Length: 430
Image (cartoon, rainbow, N blue to C red):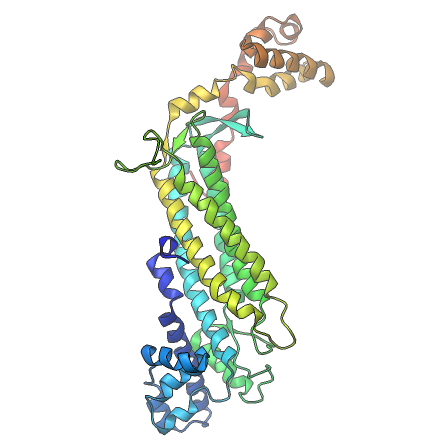
C-alpha cells in the first residue's frame, strides 16, 4: 500500500521488521517446546532464548540466497555459538511463515476492531442527534415516503456491529499455526511440539495441514474485510448523493483552506467519501485473489505467496484507512435541516399517496378504483406542479369517503415516525 493510504500502526504490523519479529517469536517458541521435551539441552535453550536477528545482515544474505527464510535464519545463527544449530530444527519455511502471518493478522484485526468501535460510537451519537429530524425517504432515487434522518445512522450502526462480529469469527478461523514439517506429517516435528508452540503464541492450530495452513481461512479473513469495506461504500454513497447540489442535505467536513478543484474555486466535493468508495473496490478485488489462492497443487505450491505479500497487508491497511476517514466524515458531517424540510415538501404532498390509497380502500372503495383515483391526481401533480393534497380535496369521490378531518388527518407527517422509538430500542438506543 502506498504511504498516502497507510496509517502508522497498521503499516508497522505489515512491515518487514514486524514480520521478522514474529518469525523470531515462532522460532523461539519451537526451541522452547523442544527444550521442554529434552531435545534441546537446557544450557543451549538459555542462550537461544536471547537470540536476535540482524536486519542489515539479513538483507545482505538475501541478495545471495534469494530466499528470505534462509537469510533470516542465517542472520540469527551467525550471532550465536554451537547452540545455533537448533534454530529452525525440523521446520520448513512455511511453518514459520504461516504461523507468523497468523500473529500479524491477529494484530491487524485488533486495530480494525478498534476502528470499528470508534465508528460505532460516532454513529450512535449522530443517530440520537437526528432521531427527530424528519426527512424524505427515497427509493430508486425518487421521493417515496418520510422517514427520520437518525434512522440512517441507526441502520449503519447495526451493520457495523455485524461487521465486528464477522471480523471476530474470521480472525479466529485465520489465526492458526502449523508446525508440522514439509508436507504436514509431523515426521520431523511431533504434534505435541506444534500444539505447545501454538499455545505459547496464543493461537489455534491447523488440525490437518499440508505444507501450509489451508487458504480458505485467509480467504474468509480477506472476504470479511471486503464485506466491511462494502458497507462503508454503501454508507459513503448515501452521503455522496445527499451532498449533490440539487439535494444538498449534508456536506462532508471541509477545511477553511481546503480546495475542491484546481480550476473552479467554488467546488466543495465529497472527495473523502469518494475515496472510501474507491478503496472499497480495491479491497473487494483482493477478496477475489484470496479465493483464487485456496486451490494449490498437491501439498503446496508457491502461487499464493506472491499474491499474499500484497493482498493481506494492503487489504488491512486500506480498510484501516477508510474506517478512519469515514469516522471523521460522520463525526464532522454538516446536516442542513432547512434543506431537508424543503426537499420533503418538494413534491407538494405526493408522499401521502399510500395513506390516501389505504384509507379509501378501508372505506369501501376497491383497490383498483382507489389506486386509479390516487394515481391520477399524483400524475397530475407531477406534471402540472399543483398540490396533490388540494387535488384530493376537490375530488368528490374522495370527499364522499373521507370527509373533513378524515382526509386532513392523512396529511400528518408524524404518522411516519410512530415507531421510531421501537427501531432505536432494537439497536440499543434511547
